[in-house]
Amino acid sequence: MPWSVAPLRLGRSWVVAPDVRTLRERWNRLVAAGPEEREELFRSSRARTPSSSVAALPGQRTGTVRFAREPGPCPEPVRLAHGPFDEQWLLPDHRLIDTARPELWRVADERQLFAVEQGYVPGAAGPALLVTAALPAGRSPAGRPGRIRPLFRRPGGEEPNLAPGLLPWLSERYGTQVTAPDVLAWALAAARPSPAGCRVPLPAGPDVWAAGVALGRGLTDIQLRGARGGERPRLPGGRRPYVRAPIPARPTTLAYEPGEETLTLDDGRISPVPADAWDFQVGGVRMLEQWFAHRTTPAEPGSLEAIGPAAWPQEWTSELLELITVLALLAARDDERTKLLADAPLLPRTALRDAGVLPVPATARRPASVLDHQEEGPEGQFALL
Image 1 (cartoon, rainbow, N blue to C red):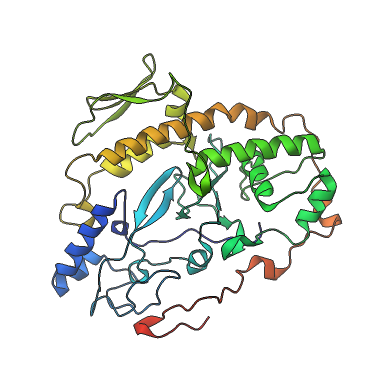
Image 2 (image 1 turned 90 degrees about the horizontal axis):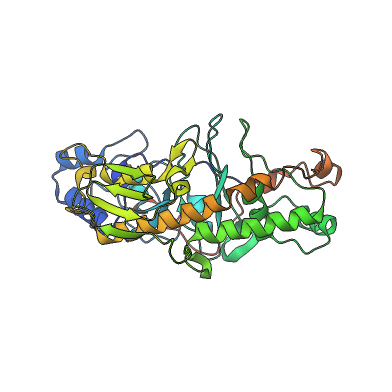
């Protein structure tokens, strides 16, 4: 997947929140402030101030007049994969984001999937590659952030983001029709972390390839959580987590009782929670602990980040139950992923070069031209692409 994009650099944390209502309240608070207070609340950077002049994000109908002069109405928040297994909401206004990576927005549609490399942490547990249907921020819980690799280079599932010649070569090698989603599935199953980035070996035989693709498709379905027409993940009956004691209005601590398989949020209790779900890590960081921290860590009083729900919303409980399910299902297949390449003969590093697939042309490493719609530039002018 030669075309890759660096993670988004938001520049200010208040443009992201776990719920839509919070973002609208923050926007209204900012717009209602006077010029000096608005400047302070905005949290200017070298890339963005209330006086910055920037184009609209592709596919978004937001103002392009300088924010200090005419903020306009609150933009409709969009779903953002803020970090591993943590989908939140983002204000998609280019005037508020330091580096939004417009090339990603141009190809984000109902067909697109994004492979997100995770930062390398020596000896840390967890997958090296994840997949999401939501626009990814590319954040890594620890270590240096990896790269974002769209599956397709154009909207509508057009032009796979793969080295030219790779699909026919793999099809001939393994004796089956190999598609772009097959390659992504294999990568999810076989990816291994390394200091140089995500490493994806290729098997010598078709049987291991078929097993890896089947495993990767299962991992993809779990991580997409029903997006792209799939089914929402569910644990078998009797193992599904339920709220056994109500979660308090403002929980401050998260803990796990392994003997009872119970997750506690102060006096709130959820069970059964498999130990593997509690211990599931990416980059050496427990996902359940990070998810909880993103919703409960106190913010600076008076800042826009401090604006949030007065009490724990019901939708957060539903998201937590689903997250437990996702982590438990992924953990249940971790041994299968680990053993996939244990004794399998691998193709040598020179195989793709000998086949003429590598080196990849420079054009394949750059974003494709997407000119099927107009984009509004600064101050209402049409952008030239």
